[in-house]
Length: 43
Image (cartoon, rainbow, N blue to C red):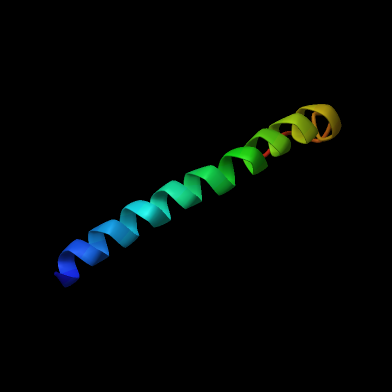
């Protein structure tokens, strides 16, 4: 039972992480390409 709960929490955490980081990645790509292209982009 605890293993199933851990798997569910892990899946939820992974989904939340992707959902939360995707917009920040898009914003970082936009602002990075617009402002920091002169000094080099950080991947």
